[in-house]
Image (cartoon, rainbow, N blue to C red; front, side, top):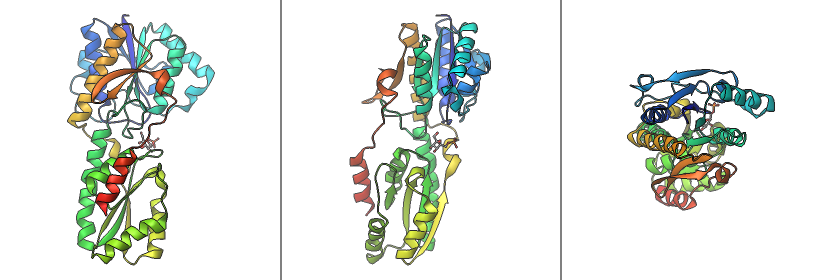
Length: 319
Ligand code: F6P
């Protein structure tokens, strides 16, 4: 192997740059060339390749986003586009590829591997919903970003004695909502994985009100329902001022935390080392605190499950 390619796909996540840096520097250590593919899978199709040398990745470890940029690319599922991508990889004399991203990118990585190109995958997503790894690059940063915002909202919630519904990201999963809800001491956490009844939620609020509780923080994952509608339903049943707020895309940006950067450096380094040892078709992830390779084949169709014990704990502690 002489030349490897790297791309970032799907929603960006803080720490992606640290991973790109780690890949480039580790590859240079092996005397390899690195090609950065811009705009994810879309850049593979349209041949947006550029060489990354050591200086191209200097001064980026602390930056959010991705210097390679990212594009959601459903067109990659079309056969003719896959063909174009493979042709570009071959013509670019790229011997191996490292894909950084979430579940969609994991599927893309698997598709390319099946075409005979050695591919390794690095999980990076603020959602932390990739099966086969305990942690994804960017999750810790997003949790802390959201926590900082919720702590601030708590100040005003207490001053004005209001009930706040705060939407955090996570269209399909509640990992971010659960982690940040537990850390923020939220009185309730709504996630797509656990069905909730508005009556049960209002009972929690009513019990608190009886005890003299005046303000509430309810963390709602994007995929758990529309906060405006949930707010209205609560308003029909409970006296009190309700406010809703969506944290939105600020959760995807910002300087990565030490945890996100170091995870990125470790996973990036391992992804390259595996290629060096002629091992591909692997996702590098975290299992029991250790960085480990797992076959993409075994994870790309699986769904990561939420830890219901933690959910239960947050519920009990939030009462
Ligand atoms: O990257 C994951 C994520 O941030 C989800 O939490 C969110 O639902 C989605 O991406 C938003 O996607 P887009 O960037 O395409 O609007």
